[in-house]
Amino acid sequence: MIVLAIVSIVAIYIFVERFLALKKALKEDKNFMDNVKDCIHKGDLEGAKRLTNNNDTPIGRMIAKGLSRLGRLLNDINQAIENVGKLEVARLENGVSMVGTIAALGPSLGFLGTVTGMVKAFFDMSTAGNNIDIQLLSSGIYEAMVTTVGGLIVGIIAIFAYNYLVSKVDKVQNAMEADIISFLEMVTECKERSA
Image (cartoon, rainbow, N blue to C red; front, side):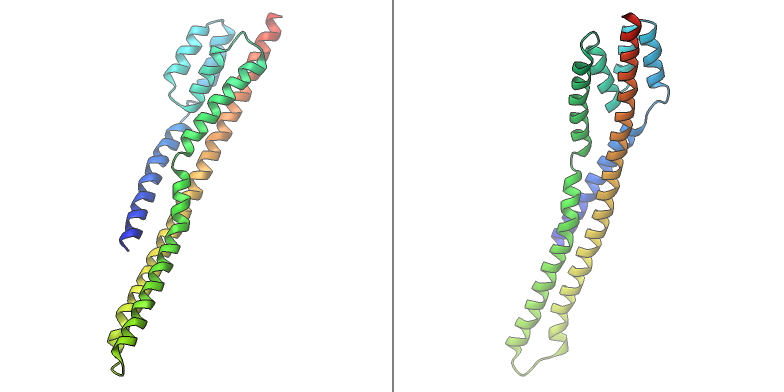
């Protein structure tokens, strides 16, 4: 039960920390991309860079990288943005797999407690000889049942937390992709106008 308590505290800590990080990443200024587009259409590259530097989100950092590559081939800009995007997604996923591991580990630890509780009950039975008492068996069976319940509770909560975090990472990733497509279309339009 002590091990179950420790892994559940770890899972809760990671969940809360990732929840806050993902909430911050999803908090997007609806006018951010429009403001960046306006700056670029006006030729105010420095203004666009200021906007991205003031936007401390994954999309802000990706657009900043794209802006730093303006003037190069579209594939170079796209590749630079994708590289930053991969790093941002990896940063967002940091620790999420540990919650998934705890989701699988909880029931396994509970099952281990069940087995040790039953071993204890049978050991007590074997050493009691002909004086087998229900009280003698109940402590081992009680240990087995409590650890099973504890392991299942930890596993159920952790799998819910894991799936929630994965869905939020996917949501951030989709938002990032949509904004990057919009940015690349804008860069293409600007190149076509200047050609």
